[in-house]
Length: 296
Image: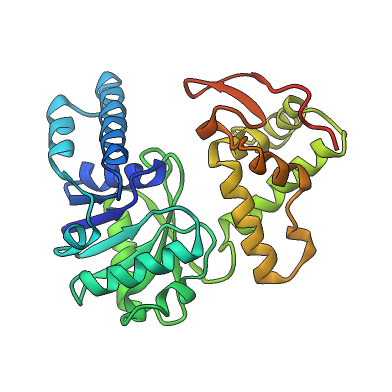
């Protein structure tokens, strides 16, 4: 396992590319838009500069990491030499299925195909390929360079050999891989998203305000950040998509998204990525609570 291809240059994709490159893997970063690739490399450079300033790495380490990354706008070219492909595109099932069909066609026959999906069935994704035994989930946490956990999700047909390889590879990234089975939301989001949704319901019903809800969970439950701030970081559109997967997968109304969440996503209030969610954001920094937008 030396040549890694990462599909998608967004927040998760550039973070995954960063950690592989920093650990001496050769990384091909693929995105259809060249400006997205440029932004991804700029973000990785900025994060490496921060690590140099904190003396966690040297200038030589930074240079080596950046030299390990090559960008591509064509998937066929980006995956042709891959030992492992990590798909990190938008959390949209139709898009992921198309990407996996293309990956299966163009990647080497022995390449492992993985997805960073946070909720979509690995078995369903694997079924559109000719190598379901070589398809697996690698669910990294955001921000990828910082967070230690990787959920390793076995599909129905994922082989023991592939699972062992991915567990070992994750450890080589100085991550802590945890094997889970293929059910909607896996472990992290099956537990996390109902909590975030309940926090939004609590706000929607007028029990407490944004800051009050987050303060209770931070100081009372020892969470590093409150659920509403976390939702802003994840992206409210992503939270909504995951809740819909949970609701469809389990057929249970307890996963039904709060109407406030639906309305905010419809209005384009997606959190940090749009500059406004439950909080107002300026240059990625939480400034103040958004007022007046949380009525029934």
